[in-house]
Amino acid sequence: MADKGKKPGLETRRSVITKLAIGAGTLAGASAMPGFMRYSQAQTSEPIKIGFQVHRTGIGAAYGRWYDRTTAAAVARINDMGGIGGRPVEIIMEDDGTDPKRGAEVLEKFARQHKCDVAYGTLFSHVVIGSAPTAGELKLPYFVVSEGHHVASGGLNRYTLQPGITDVKSQVISMAPFVANNLGKKVTMIYPDFAFGHDHRDFFSAAIEKQGGQVIEKIAIPPSETSFTKYFPKIPRDTEVLYHVMVGPAVLTFVKEMGEFFGSNGPQIFGFIDSLEAVNINSPGLEFLEGSYFWEGNPRYAQKDQTSFDKAYRQAVGVDDTGASLSDPGDVSTYAHMFGCWETLNIIKQGMEACSYRDTRDRAALIEAVELITDIPASDDHPQGAKIFNGKTHQVFGHQYISKVENKRLDVVHTTSIEDGFYPDETDYTKQPL
Image: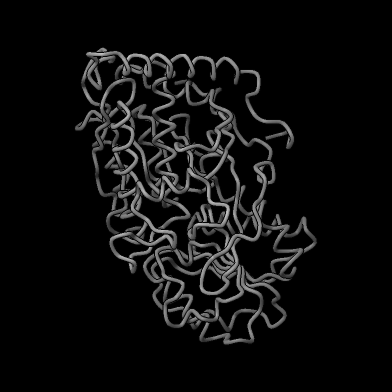
């Protein structure tokens, strides 16, 4: 975004909102009339098929399980409200193994075998990067819930969009002023050695320098690593802030070993919640996290100012006020990320209804309709908070949350503005042919 204070796509917002409002009013009126069945206003009762590329196995399995659960809840809600354009939604699920080669194969299966209308859902950046070319070749709209900067950077194609979750570049730009002003300016980074971690390394290094700080050491860790103690001696003695972001099944081991190494004498700790996703912060060995800080995409613990949207969303996905499963308090959700599934499915619905989507021949029209979306108000459809979508870069921008571990829970101490995460456009996908 070239102008930090200007919202993208302002010139088209009024016409888009008018069109969406008319469509919503028509559906509401039809469903209220006696004799109308739930899906009777549609020209066909054939379901909208959404291919769900899910990390059921591999290092993304913990996320995949909760992405699955959130997707099921969101689709149940959409269908209870009449579906998309009066048609039911059907999820076609395929495991990508958190593997880029398999991810591309899954997209081809969605398009050729299952005849899906769109593909959706994946998280890990290397899978998105490996799958997106196939989406472009097959002209299959691919809605990712990933956070990587690969979409907004222009490195993919017009058929790949990220409208339900913010990207790493926006997140770290928003976080850097808080880190520099409250925790310290000499930073050591620990991050996974693949695209997602490289985004953190590159964008936070630049962002902290703008705040007068410096990354004095960068420690990349293979995503398959299961023991981390050998990496900690590489942390310089003059480190003021230890910035960590880790992913995968060994995150609990990582934070425990970090605590064992530092004890009570370590630097200030600022982590991305990825290092603690699906992990109970009250687990033995994590006591050292008291007083440390985390970025959260969506606050795991219900806050004092909890919105009605967050309350309804928690109930729908089966999560309590601590972010754990209602059926099993020991089963902690990936709450900071999985909202992106809920919100992305509602964007797909909004786009399909705006372009009066009928079948796969309208895929290009769907892309164009989503590109026209700008303001996204906080609502039951978007419980994480208000957002702004940039149709040129196919990337959404939203609020970020910094939480502090206090009394064995995460309490939000700072919320960024949407504008805090703006940066100049690096591409314009709307100029690419469909």
